[in-house]
Length: 343
Image (cartoon, rainbow, N blue to C red; front, side, top):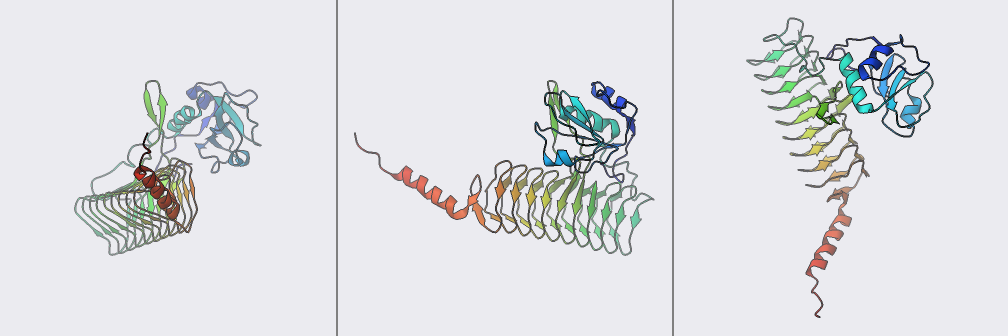
């Protein structure tokens, strides 16, 4: 379910309207006039919401959903959870894109509209300093004692906490920023995540209807990008420090007091525990889970879905406990140096 501070919902629509737009019949026995109020994730949906499931076998999340309607693949047979109408479609991903754009046709309008300068509906706290060329969108809020550098854009509905330092040429949309946060020049917070559905004619952008939540006392480096979630939130935990030129993908969950050094790339739906350290140029594949206190050395990387145990040091690709990784490097070096037998 998209946050109405950032996105305008054109619904509700009837089940028949949604099915017609997607190009499938209304499921047998379902009420074609049933209203659908919104799209949402499996876990976030309620009875009036439409969600989707791409798996071939029921997951715990699927079995526990209370969504009223759910896209599923027509090629698999699934038992519907209680109160849920399953809508078989040829491609779940493409059906959801079509439905989401029905509800939110303007989802990618950069969280506008914008008026020059500060919108009259924005709320500006006491002792706020705003540089030249700053644009503050409708309904945005800036807390007491915060500083906004020149040519920065604060999008519609964005909330900036107290005592924040936002440097120049920064863009913040679809985001809530806590107290005493520092964001250095050129950072991009809340841009749409990188998600596409392939078609024979090319790639179709998947609507990104989530948010970025930046908790208190976070520092975000220059030219770092943090993408908003697809349906849920991208979260940066309290006290985390992020260097320059870091990329954090949509729906990632970063714990408290992490250290993320320059040129790290974190793919979508990654989970970092508390006090994780990622050294320079570490690469994290999507759906990775890294336990609290883990430390990954420079240029280390993970495989998709890898689980990294907390409280240990890691190196290499895929990331392994550092002593194991060094032993493997030594063994490979020994094999290379080993003289060939004569013959």
